[in-house]
Image 1 (cartoon, each protein chain N blue to C red):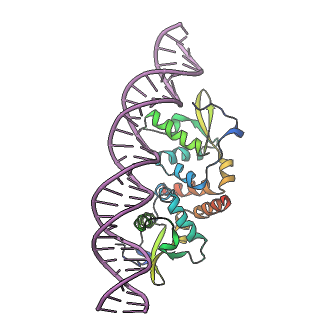
Image 2 (cartoon, each protein chain N blue to C red; image 1 turned 90 degrees about the horizontal axis):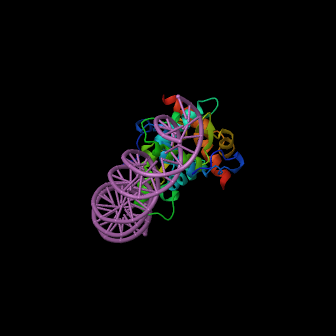
Image 3 (cartoon, protein in one colour; image 1 turned 180 degrees about the horizontal axis):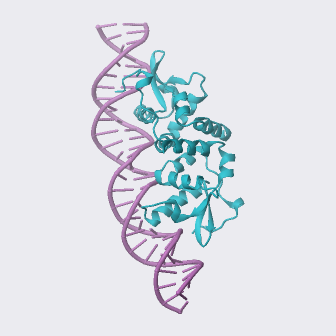
Amino acid sequence: MPPWEIPSDQLPPVAPVQKLLRALADPVRLEMVRRLAVDPAAEAPCSDLYEGLNKSTATHHFKVLVEAGVLHPVMVGPSRGHRLRRSTLQEAAPGLLDALMAAMAREG
Amino acid sequence: MPPWEIPSDQLPPVAPVQKLLRALADPVRLEMVRRLAVDPAAEAPCSDLYEGLNKSTATHHFKVLVEAGVLHPVMVGPSRGHRLRRSTLQEAAPGLLDALMAAMAREG
DNA sequence: CACGAAGTACGACACACATCATACTTCCCA
DNA sequence: TGGGAAGTATGATGTGTGTCGTACTTCGTG
């Protein structure tokens, strides 16, 4: 369903903090975001962002992240994928993503 | 049950990021933390931290926050209350609390 | 001491949601 | 043009957890 390759200016706005936290407070989704965050390009095909999950479950998680304003669905090479909306996130919640990623890195 | 006034060095450690997010990703708990965060003393009696909630529900939320390492149960004047574990949190996830509070403040 | 205020413990309940299986759609490419 | 790979949609399911009511504990105060 997601109209693929939505122009950036038509993406959903970043959700309010509480919803944003809900979106990130799932191990699967947090890992998806982490993988994008450590990627310089901040984008990857769907299947690079999870493991050991049913595809439809993954789709569900992507949907949550997109609706929370965290991800931007894009084409990555030949297949669908997602880009981390770094700058938008940084505007909405300055330092939040960095703090989270740093804390996760510290945990190993 | 909570042995009231646990010495700081016997408090549960701050939970891993994912659990920490889970603890904060509830509107009631996030508001509790916010109220403590804007208080210079960072502490308050239980009943100052919520409204329109059953007392037992509030107790439940406090428990979650204490177990996540966010709050320290303490006596505040004559009644029980909680203190925000600012410095411990800052050590475990530098900048996280600040980023969250700033983003919330911006939302009004 | 007895009362009331403030929290906690416990059990019940309902709803949210993470997960899966299956079927369907797209689109690349041989 | 026909496979197959990659995602999506939908419905079923089970668990987690936010909520409440009620009963119990503590403690300060009249």
